[in-house]
Length: 159
Image 1 (cartoon, rainbow, N blue to C red):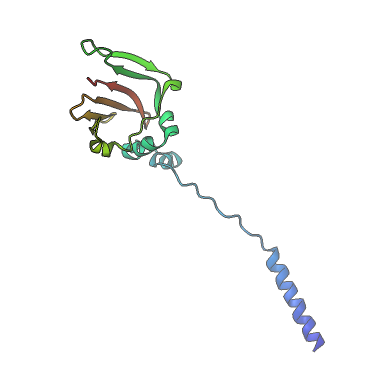
Image 2 (cartoon, rainbow, N blue to C red):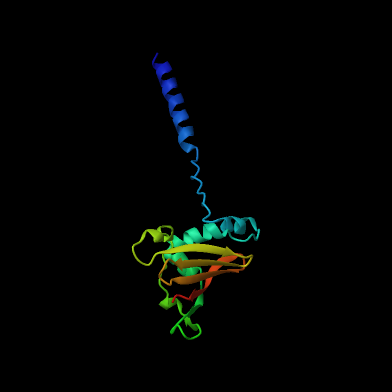
């Protein structure tokens, strides 16, 4: 009986020894691509970035917005209503975050109400804020550089 117990103990020790020697695999880390463009870059394809996905991130993420603005940024505006549009070029240090996330609610405001519309071509997208009885008329022009969208110009034609 004592021999039986010691054989069982030895077998258990051997089994435990083999199991503990088995190497554990490190958990796999899967990077979730942030956009369709990143997936395509990994695959080696060069497809144009989806504007809607780009704009959703551009609207919410101030760092991404700064990264995806072409500097110096061309800004056209009226200094005087009777004159032509003036143009200035803003440096990256002069830029401020523009929040587009609440634009769908802009008509619910008491003042400065506006609607927005989007005009698309193959290489440009113009996002317009059009005021309701207040003279707001601002165009944000997005252009393709390579296969990625960038804010390339702001035209403030408000009166």
